Length: 597
Figure 1 (cartoon, rainbow, N blue to C red):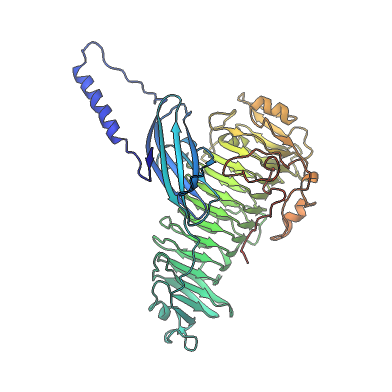
Figure 2 (cartoon, helix red, strand yellow; figure 1 turned 180 degrees about the horizontal axis):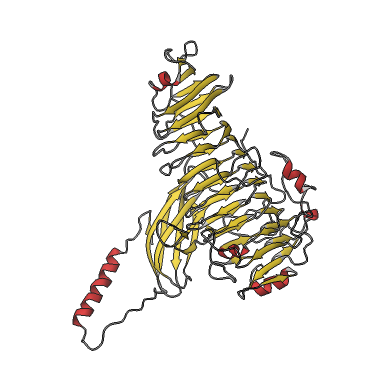
């Protein structure tokens, strides 16, 4: 095994093979030409490993060649550095995806094994064992070490200054504060904290950088609103906290990053009325966006409106977006590129999707969020350029589909509570054949006044797949499929599962057993009934309560308790004999959503 982060480079091996083939071509008898198969080999050739981390997660991407039959695997174990106590994690996921979406393409055709470790301690070094093998030949083993990032904190040794609105002057003391941000920024150096007193600071560009572990902080004092019409962040290691952003006719964007901003902290701010409240650039890295309150500019939440985001990550990477409260925008959180954690957010009343990682790559992790009343879907795959994505322990109440299943690769769907008021809880459900799905609760509440009287909890067929917003229909499981141990309440429909088995015609199944036998998934799934599941008695009334203190927690003794299957690192900490179904483990504290006290 190779210990440490160093990884083997296969160029030397390929050079030797190439030299051997060249000599063979020169000296072979000229009887018949050599013929090489155009098919890729089934044996695997390891190439480079990429590692990265956030505060609570570690991402791994291991490039390979070969393995055309996709039967290679990579076992994963992890431990605190030096402890010697190894714990199992999920295997890495086999990725072989070219990322096609209309005239859009992924940055390359990915052939790799990839995955994440989640729910780790911040600022901690972990050792990870990777054991790659292929029954057709080829293997490698490596031990690597990766440190998670720390939770951002302010330096205790910096200077503190006071600021009020104005056009110059002051020395920054409490008795004689700087008058205006320009005067304050002129003296700023890493580690300084600037306390902004109440008043209107209008439009300002923060362009003086801090340094790693020494932010320059701009904080509201709490003696009244420190109000901005717009702020531009164009330097790294800045901290903006407790500020108030109010839209004016001049600006439809609230806070914008400009350039290669790294490690910015945007926390506990309030945004009102913007089309885009927080917007990053593709060159931004490793920002922390937490505990903000965002109310957008959507007056009518009962129509589809796809323009205007709460937090627009804009195809950038490495970010943590946590515990924000977001409403009246199009998408709550959009366009994570790769290696992003999105958790603890309370998102409701949006006119498009709850969370939209469209065009995203490997290791986007979405867990512990509450999403209520998106006009379209809870999570969007339009497209997923490369997996895996992780969707874990979210509570989602939608008016239509749970997932927008347009162009998808490998993803993880584990322990979610998924409630839909649409004709289908999930249309184009063949998307799920690309997933590892476990322990979810699928609940359908059909609108008795809807025009569509015929409805299903899952629907999969070839229809409606023309144009760029579509993927090839998949009728039956393949090497990407691992779907089981979910719970279903299909309301009163007599045919809950509609599925085209590859004949071009939809077959309607009356129960789980016949569906499972025909399609080959959900062999351990169960029928549940919402009236017997949840402590909340009226789910639709609960969905209408803004930021309710309630949760769709389970009733004692209900069928969802102990009905799941453990998965290492994701759901191996449970009460009883097995994990419960849904977002909440019975007997454990319910998670917090939105800004923390």
